[in-house]
Image (cartoon, rainbow, N blue to C red; front, side, top):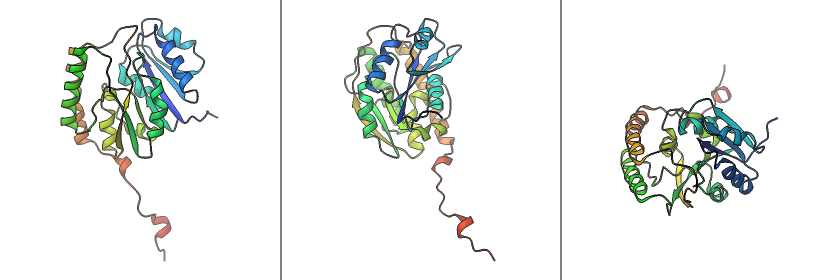
Length: 241
């Protein structure tokens, strides 16, 4: 019988061999009761070898790079905890925020972290602020920092997520459409000490706008069967002659 966990933490990695062991070691120390799912997104460095040596994680690995959304989605689908937690594998998210976030969570809610004091370059902060503003206007999700990967939500919400490249940036919008309440809490943000970002500001902005147009269309056409509620049990209440 598979072990039951109160929550599962999904952490994607792409060419983060220099950081992976440190990031997951800190996470395991702070959250010893969590199911930790590390996803190797087709890394070409030694990330997979590093992850294979960690006995306290579940490991999922792609043969080739599929993108962060595919990695996160695969980890979420494999999770067994009642709650799911997402965080980045670059060391900038602080795992100390996870337990307080799970305590804020309540039935029917999604807890989204926002980086109160971002430790990124000026240009990256400006690009992110502009992108977040445009996204809020188009999707009306009300989230100030969708780029913050730290999120807590029920495992049951995963089953209705549509898999596509870019999903990880728009999770709150899909959860809101499912009828879940979005709650924001401030979280710590740390500078990247080692390794390199996999995105450029221009590339992130162009990709974000392209995905935003697709998500807006998808949300306008999407049906949400998960929101239906049975109000009468005909097998029990019907009168038979």
